[in-house]
Structures are given as C-alpha cells and as structure tokens.
Length: 303
Image (cartoon, rainbow, N blue to C red; front, side):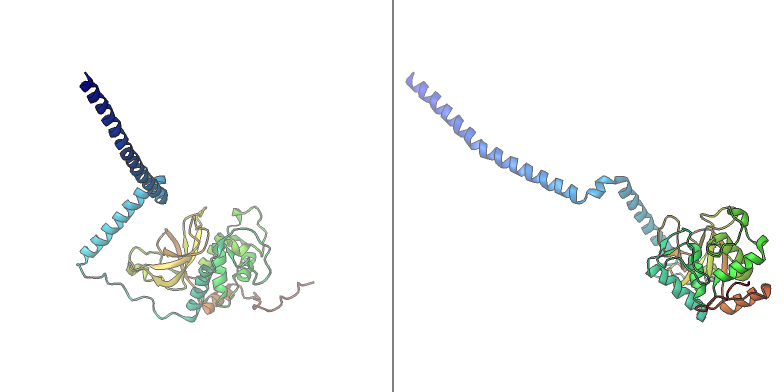
C-alpha cells in the first residue's frame, strides 16, 4: 500500500516537472511566432503600395510585359542584331530654327506652368508672367526669338480683316490687344495665312523626318468648332523609333514637357516659320502696318 502511494507521488512529481519543462518551450515558440509576425508586418508596411493598389501594380506588370514583348518582336523582325535604318535627321538648322528651338527648350527648363488666365499685358511685346503660359504663349514667345511680335501682327491683321477670324467664339467681337494673340483659334488662323504650310502625315519615321526643328505643330485634342486645342514646337531630338519630340502643354499635364512624339495626337496643321518669309508675307497683305521694334516707345495715338 505504501509502495503504491510512493509511485503515485512520484508520478505526480514527474508530471509537474514535465509541465514546468514545457513552459519555456511554449514561451520560446510564442516569441518565434511573434517575431515572424512582426517581420511580416514590417515587410507589408515597407511594401504597402503593392497591397494598397494591387490593381495598379498588376497593370504596371502587364504594361512592362507588353513592352518587353514589343521589343523582342521588333528585334526579331529585323534580325537579332539589326537596327531599323532611320532617315538622316535633322539637316543643318537655320539660325531662325535654332533660336525657336532654344526658346522652346527654355520653357521646359523653367518648368513653365499652364495658365489660361486673362492678363492685361503691355503693348507691344507684352507677355504674361514668365513662369506661366498657355499653348499660344509658347508660340508667341518663340517667334519673338526671331525678332517678330505676333501680338502686334495678329492684332493688326485681325483689325484689318475681321471676317478672317472666328470672332463668334467669344462674347466680345471687339479687338483686344491683350488677349487676341493668346487665343489659339486666332493664332491658328493667322498661321494658316502667313506661315509656311507643310504636310501633316507622320505615320512612320520617313514621314516624321519632314518635321524639322523649329516647326510649329497644331493638334486636335481640346479643340472645338473645327479648331485645334494644342500647339507645340518640334525640337532637334528624336526617339529611337525616328519620331521627333516636341515641346508642348499636353492634355492633363500642368507644365511644359519635352517627352512626347510629334504624332502623339492627331495633327491638325504643320507650319514652318522664317523671320524674313513671315514678315514679307505679312507686309504684302498689310502694307500700311507699322511694327514697333522691341524696346522702342510706341507712337502716341493720333489726336
């Protein structure tokens, strides 16, 4: 009887010891699980964009995969080591073209912001604040780089030939020297009359090579009543596909940019400007026009 009690006591003691031995193991396992959970939580926090926007992440992955496939297919279509032959471009630029391109690229370097706000600009050679611009302001500024003031020229032509311009688009049909040249339909009409008109096709690199640095391009997006809504300037840069890049204010962008191809949008018109050619054509139709040079005082109004 006594022997059985000893066995019972010893068994109970052994059980308590085993429980005590298990306790540290449970603590260790808890610490391990907690550490792993913490590391997982930290990883999720660091890479949270993947989990916050999974659809966008997958969309980017698909775009990347498509881009890789396009590159591979493009290489295979020309041979493994072959490069598509591109037309020579650009030719030696004229001084006018170089001045226009330099002006356009300066707008990008200054991070000029989009603004269509009305400003009571000075006359002549007036301008909005240099850190702001709409599409017409880009063209006006860069044509001024070759010594011609479209503010004066367009105002004179609009006053002499009002039926040429789409005055019905605005509430007031009276001439306004502060805004007439900043309205894209007006500028487009003036360009059609006095700039050199060129082909608009740019379906491949051969056609796109006809767009030279300094050329002015109008595109359809954002326009109405048959007039374009965008304007920009061709630069002396082009991508590996042979399409020139342009300086413009693209839709949904807040600042001047230089990363779009010339055919990124439907092209409405393609023009080339030279100082002598523009001035000659303008004076032929406006022989009595008096253009005030930059820095000169405007003549007082007639009594």
